[in-house]
Length: 397
Image (cartoon, one colour):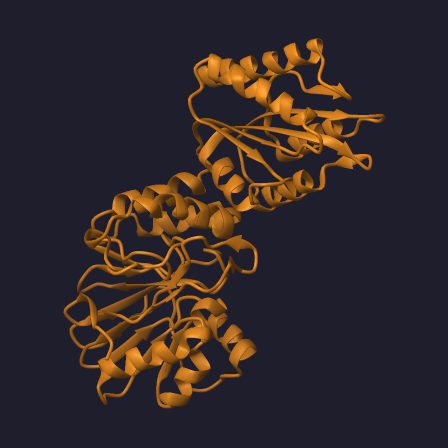
């Protein structure tokens, strides 16, 4: 019934597409949906690598059974225990009670906690090898990319890396599975958003994992989300490398809140001066309209951030406060920073934005601008000066 999607002669794709879910982790918008990728190696012995969200277990299990065609499933390899990949484990075990579950010691603690499974376990450590016949699988731990139990499975025979969430992206697979067979243009922005939203805090562990793999020949990357990378491996790795080093491109993010338009006028003035001074990449976001998912992506992408907020109940505008909290959680490093704000009777926004900059250890550029009530000529000129100061600072990096 199901088309057999082959990665190579003995390796099959048995993942599914989720076009129903509105928010990933009940937080992040999915305008293009998301795929949950699972792979089946049908060698002398058979091995399934990860499962899928339990909502799609019926389709998933039918795909597995069709490829096995009556053969036993010898191994289930768990690279990542997050429920969007591990949700179908209990049902799989019921269908294949003799399957050996392969993971590390941290995997098994989570396996018991989520599914109550404590038997039929096959523990592996860094560098261990599992032979399936012609395919030899080697295991590499990759803790905190982005959970502590994460590991990679490397097929030394065909040079394929099964990378858990690493190199993953939002977006369903609309027809083809392998990047060479599709137009991948839309996935790059979704990969940047996936990294910044989901993996963003763990730059150092990602760098360690990349270094561990640096001397390994990789011909194909099979992630748990998005395309199978074959033609665009270098670009996919470069996105994760750049973002995990917090290396911003030339560009400025202006994120602002505005209740009645006064703070927005300040943002417009700053942006116009940035443009007048040669800054071409300017990402402006009204936090009341743009989901923080996209703002975080751009903050990871660009090296300068300017944030504006009105004073709200002697504090920051709530959506600005929420955005700053998300930035802090991700420990974004080495950004140029500017700030501005407005108030009606008592100013607190700019003071709080200054404190945020100090806490993040970012470099303050230009003089913060704060206006009382409507924007007037003096503060309009100060906004232009802030925009120029940021443009000038970026030119000397």
